[in-house]
Image (cartoon, rainbow, N blue to C red):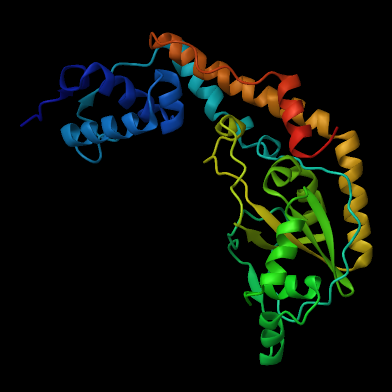
Length: 321
Protein backbone atom coordinates (compact mmCIF):
# COMPACT_ATOMS: atom_id res chain seq x y z
CA UNK A 1 0.00 0.00 0.00
CA UNK A 2 1.41 3.37 -1.04
CA UNK A 3 1.59 5.83 1.83
CA UNK A 4 -0.25 9.06 1.11
CA UNK A 5 2.06 12.04 0.82
CA UNK A 6 1.55 15.22 2.83
CA UNK A 7 1.51 18.63 1.16
CA UNK A 8 3.17 21.08 3.54
CA UNK A 9 1.35 24.00 1.88
CA UNK A 10 -2.01 22.52 2.90
CA UNK A 11 -0.93 21.37 6.36
CA UNK A 12 0.92 24.41 7.65
CA UNK A 13 -0.12 28.02 8.04
CA UNK A 14 1.62 30.63 5.88
CA UNK A 15 3.99 31.71 8.66
CA UNK A 16 4.68 28.13 9.71
CA UNK A 17 5.49 27.24 6.11
CA UNK A 18 7.84 30.20 5.67
CA UNK A 19 9.70 29.40 8.87
CA UNK A 20 9.86 25.67 8.14
CA UNK A 21 11.26 26.24 4.64
CA UNK A 22 13.99 28.53 5.95
CA UNK A 23 14.80 26.14 8.80
CA UNK A 24 15.07 23.24 6.34
CA UNK A 25 17.43 25.35 4.25
CA UNK A 26 19.73 25.67 7.26
CA UNK A 27 19.01 29.16 8.56
CA UNK A 28 19.40 29.70 12.29
CA UNK A 29 16.61 31.11 14.44
CA UNK A 30 18.08 34.61 14.60
CA UNK A 31 18.45 34.64 10.81
CA UNK A 32 14.85 33.55 10.32
CA UNK A 33 13.68 36.16 12.82
CA UNK A 34 15.73 38.85 11.05
CA UNK A 35 14.42 37.87 7.62
CA UNK A 36 10.75 37.78 8.66
CA UNK A 37 10.90 40.72 11.06
CA UNK A 38 9.67 38.71 14.05
CA UNK A 39 11.02 37.74 17.46
CA UNK A 40 13.18 34.66 17.94
CA UNK A 41 10.63 33.41 20.45
CA UNK A 42 8.00 33.48 17.70
CA UNK A 43 10.28 31.42 15.47
CA UNK A 44 10.71 28.88 18.25
CA UNK A 45 6.97 28.59 18.94
CA UNK A 46 6.15 28.25 15.24
CA UNK A 47 8.74 25.50 14.82
CA UNK A 48 7.14 23.72 17.76
CA UNK A 49 3.79 23.91 15.96
CA UNK A 50 5.38 22.48 12.81
CA UNK A 51 6.81 19.63 14.87
CA UNK A 52 3.41 18.96 16.42
CA UNK A 53 1.84 18.72 12.96
CA UNK A 54 4.55 16.84 11.06
CA UNK A 55 6.47 15.02 13.78
CA UNK A 56 9.96 15.45 15.27
CA UNK A 57 11.72 14.32 12.06
CA UNK A 58 9.78 16.64 9.76
CA UNK A 59 12.94 18.05 8.15
CA UNK A 60 14.02 14.61 6.91
CA UNK A 61 10.63 13.11 6.06
CA UNK A 62 10.43 11.94 2.45
CA UNK A 63 6.63 11.79 2.40
CA UNK A 64 6.21 15.55 2.88
CA UNK A 65 5.95 17.68 -0.25
CA UNK A 66 7.71 21.01 0.13
CA UNK A 67 7.64 23.94 -2.29
CA UNK A 68 11.01 24.69 -3.84
CA UNK A 69 12.97 27.71 -2.72
CA UNK A 70 13.12 30.55 -5.18
CA UNK A 71 16.49 30.76 -6.99
CA UNK A 72 17.23 34.11 -5.33
CA UNK A 73 16.60 32.64 -1.88
CA UNK A 74 18.63 29.53 -2.66
CA UNK A 75 21.55 31.68 -3.80
CA UNK A 76 21.38 33.78 -0.63
CA UNK A 77 21.38 30.63 1.52
CA UNK A 78 24.53 29.46 -0.26
CA UNK A 79 26.18 32.77 0.62
CA UNK A 80 25.27 32.33 4.28
CA UNK A 81 26.59 28.78 4.34
CA UNK A 82 29.49 29.09 1.90
CA UNK A 83 33.06 28.00 2.69
CA UNK A 84 34.09 31.58 3.39
CA UNK A 85 31.75 31.48 6.39
CA UNK A 86 34.32 29.44 8.23
CA UNK A 87 37.04 32.04 7.83
CA UNK A 88 38.59 32.56 11.28
CA UNK A 89 38.90 36.26 10.54
CA UNK A 90 35.14 36.63 10.63
CA UNK A 91 35.12 35.72 14.31
CA UNK A 92 38.26 37.53 15.32
CA UNK A 93 38.10 40.78 17.16
CA UNK A 94 40.44 43.34 18.49
CA UNK A 95 41.26 45.21 21.61
CA UNK A 96 43.40 48.07 22.65
CA UNK A 97 44.09 50.78 25.15
CA UNK A 98 47.17 52.67 26.20
CA UNK A 99 49.66 50.30 27.81
CA UNK A 100 49.61 50.70 31.56
CA UNK A 101 52.56 50.29 33.89
CA UNK A 102 52.96 46.74 35.13
CA UNK A 103 51.88 46.17 38.70
CA UNK A 104 54.21 44.22 40.99
CA UNK A 105 52.72 41.01 42.37
CA UNK A 106 54.14 37.99 44.10
CA UNK A 107 54.24 34.76 42.11
CA UNK A 108 51.02 32.78 42.40
CA UNK A 109 51.36 29.48 44.25
CA UNK A 110 48.34 27.82 42.77
CA UNK A 111 47.02 28.63 39.34
CA UNK A 112 45.10 26.44 36.93
CA UNK A 113 46.96 26.53 33.62
CA UNK A 114 45.11 25.45 30.51
CA UNK A 115 47.38 23.89 27.92
CA UNK A 116 46.18 23.91 24.35
CA UNK A 117 47.63 23.24 20.95
CA UNK A 118 47.46 26.92 20.20
CA UNK A 119 44.74 29.37 19.25
CA UNK A 120 42.37 31.29 21.44
CA UNK A 121 40.31 29.26 23.88
CA UNK A 122 36.60 30.16 24.22
CA UNK A 123 35.57 31.71 27.48
CA UNK A 124 35.35 29.24 30.31
CA UNK A 125 35.76 26.20 28.06
CA UNK A 126 38.65 23.76 28.19
CA UNK A 127 39.18 22.42 24.67
CA UNK A 128 39.21 18.73 23.91
CA UNK A 129 42.62 17.29 24.69
CA UNK A 130 43.58 20.14 27.00
CA UNK A 131 45.13 19.31 30.35
CA UNK A 132 44.77 21.19 33.61
CA UNK A 133 47.87 21.54 35.79
CA UNK A 134 47.51 22.52 39.42
CA UNK A 135 50.50 23.92 41.25
CA UNK A 136 51.04 22.98 44.90
CA UNK A 137 47.99 23.73 47.11
CA UNK A 138 47.76 27.03 48.94
CA UNK A 139 48.61 26.58 52.61
CA UNK A 140 46.34 27.64 55.45
CA UNK A 141 48.47 30.59 56.50
CA UNK A 142 48.17 32.18 53.06
CA UNK A 143 44.40 31.83 53.15
CA UNK A 144 44.29 33.35 56.63
CA UNK A 145 46.51 36.25 55.57
CA UNK A 146 44.27 36.88 52.57
CA UNK A 147 41.17 37.00 54.75
CA UNK A 148 42.81 39.23 57.33
CA UNK A 149 44.15 41.64 54.75
CA UNK A 150 47.84 41.20 55.61
CA UNK A 151 48.88 40.85 51.97
CA UNK A 152 49.65 43.59 49.51
CA UNK A 153 46.81 44.36 47.06
CA UNK A 154 48.67 42.53 44.29
CA UNK A 155 49.26 39.43 46.40
CA UNK A 156 45.65 39.44 47.54
CA UNK A 157 44.51 39.67 43.91
CA UNK A 158 46.39 36.47 43.08
CA UNK A 159 44.67 34.62 45.91
CA UNK A 160 41.30 36.02 44.85
CA UNK A 161 41.85 34.60 41.37
CA UNK A 162 42.69 31.25 42.96
CA UNK A 163 39.35 31.15 44.75
CA UNK A 164 40.38 32.43 48.18
CA UNK A 165 38.12 35.31 49.28
CA UNK A 166 39.96 38.57 49.78
CA UNK A 167 38.26 42.00 49.94
CA UNK A 168 41.57 43.69 49.16
CA UNK A 169 42.09 41.37 46.20
CA UNK A 170 38.60 42.04 44.88
CA UNK A 171 39.18 45.79 45.08
CA UNK A 172 42.50 45.46 43.26
CA UNK A 173 40.97 43.40 40.44
CA UNK A 174 38.02 45.78 40.18
CA UNK A 175 40.46 48.61 39.55
CA UNK A 176 42.36 46.55 36.96
CA UNK A 177 39.12 45.71 35.16
CA UNK A 178 38.47 49.39 34.56
CA UNK A 179 41.19 49.24 31.90
CA UNK A 180 41.03 47.53 28.52
CA UNK A 181 44.13 45.40 28.83
CA UNK A 182 46.87 45.34 31.40
CA UNK A 183 49.98 43.36 32.32
CA UNK A 184 50.18 42.09 35.90
CA UNK A 185 53.52 40.88 37.23
CA UNK A 186 53.47 37.42 38.82
CA UNK A 187 56.98 37.09 40.15
CA UNK A 188 59.12 36.21 37.15
CA UNK A 189 56.03 35.61 35.04
CA UNK A 190 53.15 37.83 34.13
CA UNK A 191 49.43 37.66 33.60
CA UNK A 192 47.64 39.58 30.86
CA UNK A 193 44.15 40.84 31.69
CA UNK A 194 41.92 41.66 28.71
CA UNK A 195 38.48 43.23 29.11
CA UNK A 196 35.44 41.74 27.37
CA UNK A 197 35.17 44.36 24.64
CA UNK A 198 38.91 44.54 24.12
CA UNK A 199 39.12 40.75 23.85
CA UNK A 200 36.51 40.82 21.10
CA UNK A 201 38.34 43.39 19.02
CA UNK A 202 41.81 42.02 19.77
CA UNK A 203 41.02 38.40 18.97
CA UNK A 204 43.26 38.14 15.87
CA UNK A 205 46.22 39.59 17.79
CA UNK A 206 45.57 37.36 20.81
CA UNK A 207 45.35 34.33 18.51
CA UNK A 208 48.78 35.13 17.05
CA UNK A 209 50.30 35.50 20.51
CA UNK A 210 48.72 32.20 21.55
CA UNK A 211 49.93 30.41 18.41
CA UNK A 212 53.44 31.67 19.14
CA UNK A 213 53.09 30.46 22.75
CA UNK A 214 53.68 33.95 24.10
CA UNK A 215 50.40 33.77 26.04
CA UNK A 216 48.23 30.94 27.29
CA UNK A 217 44.56 31.15 28.30
CA UNK A 218 44.33 31.09 32.09
CA UNK A 219 40.72 31.71 33.04
CA UNK A 220 37.61 33.62 32.07
CA UNK A 221 36.42 36.59 34.11
CA UNK A 222 32.64 36.56 34.43
CA UNK A 223 32.40 39.42 36.91
CA UNK A 224 31.23 41.87 34.23
CA UNK A 225 28.72 41.66 31.41
CA UNK A 226 29.93 39.98 28.21
CA UNK A 227 30.52 42.16 25.17
CA UNK A 228 27.53 41.38 22.98
CA UNK A 229 26.62 44.12 20.46
CA UNK A 230 23.35 43.59 18.60
CA UNK A 231 25.15 42.97 15.30
CA UNK A 232 27.36 40.22 16.72
CA UNK A 233 25.52 37.35 14.91
CA UNK A 234 26.54 38.87 11.58
CA UNK A 235 30.21 38.28 12.41
CA UNK A 236 30.08 34.49 12.54
CA UNK A 237 28.45 31.57 10.79
CA UNK A 238 28.39 29.70 14.09
CA UNK A 239 26.56 30.46 17.29
CA UNK A 240 27.11 34.05 18.33
CA UNK A 241 28.21 34.19 21.95
CA UNK A 242 29.12 37.26 23.90
CA UNK A 243 32.80 37.67 24.74
CA UNK A 244 33.90 37.60 28.38
CA UNK A 245 36.97 39.24 29.85
CA UNK A 246 39.85 36.85 30.49
CA UNK A 247 43.28 36.36 32.03
CA UNK A 248 46.17 34.94 30.01
CA UNK A 249 49.37 33.50 31.43
CA UNK A 250 52.67 34.80 30.08
CA UNK A 251 55.75 32.59 30.13
CA UNK A 252 58.20 35.17 31.46
CA UNK A 253 58.98 38.87 31.63
CA UNK A 254 60.26 38.86 28.05
CA UNK A 255 56.95 37.41 26.87
CA UNK A 256 55.12 40.17 28.70
CA UNK A 257 57.18 42.88 27.04
CA UNK A 258 56.74 41.23 23.65
CA UNK A 259 52.97 40.82 24.09
CA UNK A 260 52.55 44.43 25.19
CA UNK A 261 54.60 45.72 22.26
CA UNK A 262 52.81 43.44 19.78
CA UNK A 263 49.34 44.51 20.92
CA UNK A 264 50.21 48.20 20.65
CA UNK A 265 51.70 47.68 17.20
CA UNK A 266 48.71 45.62 16.05
CA UNK A 267 46.30 48.30 17.19
CA UNK A 268 48.28 51.01 15.39
CA UNK A 269 48.77 49.13 12.11
CA UNK A 270 46.18 46.35 11.74
CA UNK A 271 43.04 47.44 13.56
CA UNK A 272 41.53 49.42 10.69
CA UNK A 273 42.15 46.62 8.17
CA UNK A 274 40.59 44.09 10.50
CA UNK A 275 37.51 46.24 11.09
CA UNK A 276 37.17 46.70 7.32
CA UNK A 277 37.33 42.94 6.69
CA UNK A 278 34.84 42.31 9.49
CA UNK A 279 32.50 44.96 8.10
CA UNK A 280 32.69 43.44 4.60
CA UNK A 281 31.79 40.02 5.97
CA UNK A 282 28.87 41.47 7.96
CA UNK A 283 27.59 43.29 4.88
CA UNK A 284 27.77 40.10 2.83
CA UNK A 285 25.61 38.25 5.34
CA UNK A 286 23.21 41.19 5.67
CA UNK A 287 22.71 41.37 1.90
CA UNK A 288 21.98 37.65 1.78
CA UNK A 289 19.35 37.96 4.52
CA UNK A 290 17.91 41.03 2.81
CA UNK A 291 17.39 39.07 -0.42
CA UNK A 292 15.56 36.35 1.49
CA UNK A 293 13.44 38.96 3.30
CA UNK A 294 12.43 40.61 0.02
CA UNK A 295 11.54 37.22 -1.48
CA UNK A 296 9.34 36.58 1.56
CA UNK A 297 7.57 39.92 1.11
CA UNK A 298 9.11 41.41 4.24
CA UNK A 299 10.93 44.62 4.92
CA UNK A 300 14.68 45.07 5.05
CA UNK A 301 16.54 43.86 8.14
CA UNK A 302 17.86 46.45 10.56
CA UNK A 303 20.73 48.29 8.83
CA UNK A 304 24.21 47.47 10.06
CA UNK A 305 26.57 50.19 11.28
CA UNK A 306 28.64 51.59 8.43
CA UNK A 307 32.42 51.23 8.38
CA UNK A 308 33.18 54.57 10.12
CA UNK A 309 30.67 53.74 12.87
CA UNK A 310 32.10 50.25 13.34
CA UNK A 311 35.63 51.62 13.51
CA UNK A 312 34.48 54.25 16.00
CA UNK A 313 32.98 51.49 18.15
CA UNK A 314 36.24 49.54 18.08
CA UNK A 315 38.24 52.62 19.01
CA UNK A 316 35.78 53.50 21.79
CA UNK A 317 35.97 50.02 23.28
CA UNK A 318 39.75 50.04 23.07
CA UNK A 319 40.01 53.46 24.65
CA UNK A 320 41.64 55.07 21.61
CA UNK A 321 41.14 58.81 21.18
